[in-house]
Image (cartoon, rainbow, N blue to C red; front, side):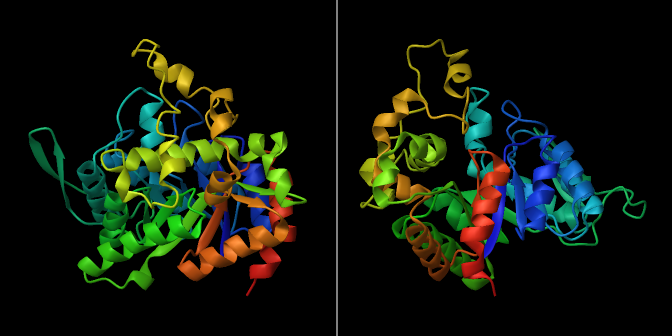
Length: 357
């Protein structure tokens, strides 16, 4: 089992990324949400310059924030600074787009963006479209070391519903799950990834699976209802549950019946219908993934907390990770709400030794 960390896009985070690398973490992911954090490629460049082994990537970018040639250039540039240890994480932009008050990208837009980036990464001449204009493009100076096309850049797709999970199975090198901890959620998502892979004639075993989540060790199971736990993991619970609900909003029956009521309960947590449409998102996403909002507290049951985060006693959390590993998850990536190095130390000391090879 690999262990990674998920950081808010932060141009000052490179010290913490180096600290995680030194503690044995294999991956560092930076959110690409422009209205919430620093510019992701600038932040990744600093991380690349300060580290030697850890794999780096946006966790995740999307097709709307940048045109595909810009996304490809950003990734290939980081690949020049950190050769062979770069992964492109990309999704529809459920959060990034909604912080702007805009809808997420369509699945077809995501797939086309990936097509262009992958072709450019391979040094190919690629069909590129903007509106009714259709052109051929490629990187024009591959030998001048502005970017690195020699080392492969895998592409991982973030998926929270069946449609994108199946697309990841068809075309991606890996899939990123957000808040999938409960065996039912993990099985649901991985089954859809495998379905897409099989339809494309691919081996499902070739697809890397990681789950991004929060982490909190308690003294006893009863502590999960405490204020400290709710404040530490509640933002991740609310965010991931809402994204699951959004991904299946047209047909909630697509979600596992065992958790459907809990997940659909979050469908309205990022809505402010009484606020003007031009500004409501400013209120909704203030403090996003940083603080637990009062209106979310009533939804924070032990069941949904443990379904979407690694929260519980040490033995409970170890059992959760072991279950995820057996189900086909290759990496657990932790987003710290508490001070980062405190969480790094706790995971490195209490959890990682049980999964070392």
